[in-house]
Length: 223
Ligand code: SF4
Image (cartoon, rainbow, N blue to C red):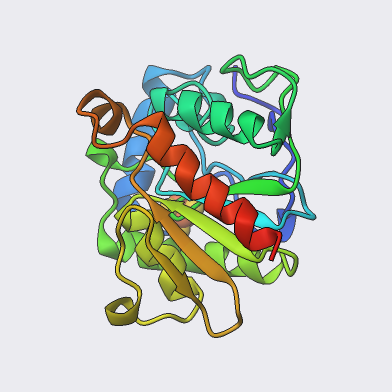
Protein backbone atom coordinates (compact mmCIF):
# COMPACT_ATOMS: atom_id res chain seq x y z
CA UNK A 1 0.00 0.00 0.00
CA UNK A 2 1.43 3.40 -0.95
CA UNK A 3 1.13 6.44 1.27
CA UNK A 4 -2.01 8.24 0.16
CA UNK A 5 -2.51 11.04 1.00
CA UNK A 6 1.07 12.20 1.71
CA UNK A 7 1.99 12.01 5.40
CA UNK A 8 3.07 15.64 5.60
CA UNK A 9 1.56 18.83 4.26
CA UNK A 10 4.11 20.94 2.46
CA UNK A 11 4.40 24.58 3.52
CA UNK A 12 5.20 25.36 -0.14
CA UNK A 13 2.83 23.20 -2.22
CA UNK A 14 3.49 25.31 -5.30
CA UNK A 15 7.14 24.20 -5.15
CA UNK A 16 6.56 20.47 -4.95
CA UNK A 17 7.36 17.93 -7.64
CA UNK A 18 4.73 15.47 -8.85
CA UNK A 19 4.96 12.06 -7.28
CA UNK A 20 6.21 10.57 -10.57
CA UNK A 21 8.50 13.42 -11.57
CA UNK A 22 10.31 12.07 -14.64
CA UNK A 23 13.15 14.57 -14.91
CA UNK A 24 16.11 12.58 -13.54
CA UNK A 25 16.28 9.16 -15.25
CA UNK A 26 18.77 7.64 -12.83
CA UNK A 27 16.69 8.66 -9.81
CA UNK A 28 13.47 7.54 -11.48
CA UNK A 29 15.01 4.10 -12.04
CA UNK A 30 15.98 3.85 -8.38
CA UNK A 31 12.52 5.06 -7.34
CA UNK A 32 10.90 2.32 -9.41
CA UNK A 33 13.24 -0.31 -7.98
CA UNK A 34 12.43 0.86 -4.44
CA UNK A 35 8.70 0.76 -5.17
CA UNK A 36 9.02 -2.85 -6.27
CA UNK A 37 11.18 -3.79 -3.31
CA UNK A 38 9.32 -1.78 -0.67
CA UNK A 39 5.80 -0.96 -1.90
CA UNK A 40 4.84 0.30 1.57
CA UNK A 41 7.53 3.01 1.53
CA UNK A 42 7.09 6.61 0.35
CA UNK A 43 9.42 6.20 -2.69
CA UNK A 44 8.72 9.59 -4.28
CA UNK A 45 10.01 13.17 -4.24
CA UNK A 46 10.06 14.25 -0.61
CA UNK A 47 8.17 17.47 0.09
CA UNK A 48 9.37 20.29 2.29
CA UNK A 49 8.16 20.22 5.85
CA UNK A 50 7.69 22.88 8.46
CA UNK A 51 6.33 26.32 9.13
CA UNK A 52 5.15 28.37 6.10
CA UNK A 53 6.07 31.49 8.08
CA UNK A 54 9.58 30.23 8.80
CA UNK A 55 12.51 32.60 9.32
CA UNK A 56 14.97 29.69 9.13
CA UNK A 57 15.37 27.14 6.35
CA UNK A 58 17.33 23.98 7.05
CA UNK A 59 18.68 22.62 3.78
CA UNK A 60 19.46 18.94 3.37
CA UNK A 61 21.08 17.25 0.41
CA UNK A 62 18.59 14.54 -0.56
CA UNK A 63 16.37 11.92 1.07
CA UNK A 64 18.05 9.02 2.82
CA UNK A 65 16.93 5.59 1.70
CA UNK A 66 15.66 4.45 5.08
CA UNK A 67 14.78 7.96 6.23
CA UNK A 68 12.75 10.38 4.16
CA UNK A 69 12.53 8.06 1.17
CA UNK A 70 10.84 5.53 3.43
CA UNK A 71 8.71 7.79 5.61
CA UNK A 72 8.02 10.74 3.29
CA UNK A 73 9.10 13.39 5.83
CA UNK A 74 12.54 15.03 5.69
CA UNK A 75 15.18 13.49 7.97
CA UNK A 76 12.57 11.27 9.57
CA UNK A 77 13.67 7.73 10.39
CA UNK A 78 17.37 7.99 9.74
CA UNK A 79 20.41 8.65 11.93
CA UNK A 80 20.89 12.22 10.70
CA UNK A 81 17.40 13.18 11.81
CA UNK A 82 18.03 12.26 15.45
CA UNK A 83 20.52 15.08 15.94
CA UNK A 84 18.68 17.52 13.69
CA UNK A 85 15.37 17.20 15.48
CA UNK A 86 16.98 17.12 18.93
CA UNK A 87 18.67 20.40 18.00
CA UNK A 88 15.51 22.01 16.66
CA UNK A 89 13.73 21.04 19.88
CA UNK A 90 16.59 22.39 22.00
CA UNK A 91 16.44 25.77 20.26
CA UNK A 92 12.67 26.06 20.49
CA UNK A 93 12.28 25.51 16.76
CA UNK A 94 10.11 22.44 17.26
CA UNK A 95 7.55 21.21 19.74
CA UNK A 96 6.30 17.74 20.61
CA UNK A 97 8.25 14.50 20.57
CA UNK A 98 10.27 13.18 17.68
CA UNK A 99 9.61 9.48 17.24
CA UNK A 100 11.15 8.97 13.80
CA UNK A 101 7.67 8.54 12.39
CA UNK A 102 5.57 11.09 10.44
CA UNK A 103 2.64 10.29 12.70
CA UNK A 104 4.45 11.56 15.79
CA UNK A 105 3.36 14.87 17.26
CA UNK A 106 6.45 16.84 16.29
CA UNK A 107 5.75 20.31 14.90
CA UNK A 108 8.34 22.71 13.54
CA UNK A 109 7.97 26.36 14.57
CA UNK A 110 9.72 29.21 12.77
CA UNK A 111 11.70 26.84 10.58
CA UNK A 112 11.26 24.43 7.73
CA UNK A 113 13.30 21.76 6.02
CA UNK A 114 14.06 21.62 2.32
CA UNK A 115 16.18 19.23 0.31
CA UNK A 116 18.36 20.33 -2.59
CA UNK A 117 17.41 17.12 -4.38
CA UNK A 118 13.96 15.71 -3.74
CA UNK A 119 14.55 12.09 -4.76
CA UNK A 120 16.74 9.35 -3.33
CA UNK A 121 20.08 9.20 -5.16
CA UNK A 122 22.14 6.00 -5.52
CA UNK A 123 24.85 5.72 -2.88
CA UNK A 124 23.52 8.93 -1.36
CA UNK A 125 25.30 10.95 -4.05
CA UNK A 126 23.33 13.04 -6.51
CA UNK A 127 25.03 13.93 -9.78
CA UNK A 128 25.56 17.62 -10.61
CA UNK A 129 22.97 17.39 -13.39
CA UNK A 130 20.41 16.05 -10.91
CA UNK A 131 21.10 18.89 -8.48
CA UNK A 132 20.70 21.37 -11.32
CA UNK A 133 17.53 19.70 -12.60
CA UNK A 134 15.87 19.83 -9.19
CA UNK A 135 17.02 23.39 -8.48
CA UNK A 136 13.90 25.07 -9.93
CA UNK A 137 11.81 23.40 -7.22
CA UNK A 138 14.23 24.64 -4.61
CA UNK A 139 14.28 28.15 -6.06
CA UNK A 140 10.50 28.26 -6.21
CA UNK A 141 10.35 27.23 -2.57
CA UNK A 142 12.77 29.97 -1.53
CA UNK A 143 10.89 32.53 -3.58
CA UNK A 144 7.70 31.46 -1.81
CA UNK A 145 9.22 31.99 1.61
CA UNK A 146 9.88 35.72 1.95
CA UNK A 147 10.24 35.50 5.72
CA UNK A 148 13.22 33.15 5.51
CA UNK A 149 16.25 35.25 6.47
CA UNK A 150 18.72 32.52 7.44
CA UNK A 151 19.53 29.18 5.83
CA UNK A 152 21.51 26.40 7.50
CA UNK A 153 22.86 23.98 4.91
CA UNK A 154 23.88 20.50 6.00
CA UNK A 155 26.97 19.52 4.04
CA UNK A 156 28.70 20.90 0.97
CA UNK A 157 26.24 19.66 -1.65
CA UNK A 158 23.30 21.30 0.11
CA UNK A 159 25.35 24.41 0.77
CA UNK A 160 26.44 24.85 -2.82
CA UNK A 161 22.93 24.20 -4.13
CA UNK A 162 21.55 26.80 -1.73
CA UNK A 163 24.31 29.27 -2.63
CA UNK A 164 23.50 28.96 -6.34
CA UNK A 165 19.77 29.33 -5.67
CA UNK A 166 20.52 32.49 -3.70
CA UNK A 167 22.49 33.95 -6.62
CA UNK A 168 25.90 33.53 -5.00
CA UNK A 169 29.09 32.62 -6.86
CA UNK A 170 30.67 29.58 -5.26
CA UNK A 171 34.06 31.30 -5.38
CA UNK A 172 32.63 33.77 -2.87
CA UNK A 173 30.61 31.24 -0.89
CA UNK A 174 33.03 28.58 0.28
CA UNK A 175 31.54 25.81 2.36
CA UNK A 176 32.94 24.92 5.73
CA UNK A 177 31.61 24.09 9.15
CA UNK A 178 30.49 27.45 10.50
CA UNK A 179 30.82 29.19 7.13
CA UNK A 180 28.66 32.26 6.70
CA UNK A 181 27.89 34.31 3.63
CA UNK A 182 25.33 36.95 2.77
CA UNK A 183 23.35 36.65 -0.46
CA UNK A 184 22.53 39.62 -2.71
CA UNK A 185 19.03 39.78 -1.22
CA UNK A 186 20.39 39.89 2.33
CA UNK A 187 19.62 36.32 3.27
CA UNK A 188 22.41 34.63 5.20
CA UNK A 189 23.66 31.15 4.41
CA UNK A 190 25.36 29.17 7.18
CA UNK A 191 27.19 25.89 6.65
CA UNK A 192 27.49 22.92 8.94
CA UNK A 193 28.89 19.48 8.45
CA UNK A 194 26.08 17.05 7.74
CA UNK A 195 24.62 15.23 10.73
CA UNK A 196 25.28 11.90 9.01
CA UNK A 197 26.18 8.76 10.90
CA UNK A 198 29.68 8.83 9.39
CA UNK A 199 30.38 12.40 10.48
CA UNK A 200 29.12 11.77 13.98
CA UNK A 201 30.84 8.41 14.43
CA UNK A 202 34.16 9.89 13.32
CA UNK A 203 33.57 12.95 15.55
CA UNK A 204 33.95 15.20 12.54
CA UNK A 205 30.69 16.64 13.81
CA UNK A 206 29.71 16.67 17.46
CA UNK A 207 26.35 17.79 18.81
CA UNK A 208 28.08 20.83 20.32
CA UNK A 209 29.48 21.81 16.92
CA UNK A 210 26.08 21.41 15.32
CA UNK A 211 24.41 23.47 18.01
CA UNK A 212 26.93 26.26 17.55
CA UNK A 213 25.67 26.81 14.02
CA UNK A 214 22.04 26.90 15.11
CA UNK A 215 22.96 29.26 17.92
CA UNK A 216 24.48 31.56 15.31
CA UNK A 217 21.29 31.35 13.26
CA UNK A 218 19.25 32.42 16.27
CA UNK A 219 21.71 35.21 16.95
CA UNK A 220 21.29 36.46 13.40
CA UNK A 221 17.51 36.40 13.71
CA UNK A 222 17.75 38.46 16.86
CA UNK A 223 19.84 41.00 15.02
S1 SF4 B 1 15.30 14.94 -8.07
FE1 SF4 B 1 13.84 16.59 -8.43
S2 SF4 B 1 13.87 17.00 -10.66
FE2 SF4 B 1 14.85 14.99 -10.29
S3 SF4 B 1 13.21 13.47 -10.54
FE3 SF4 B 1 13.29 14.01 -8.36
S4 SF4 B 1 11.82 15.69 -8.07
FE4 SF4 B 1 12.22 15.50 -10.28
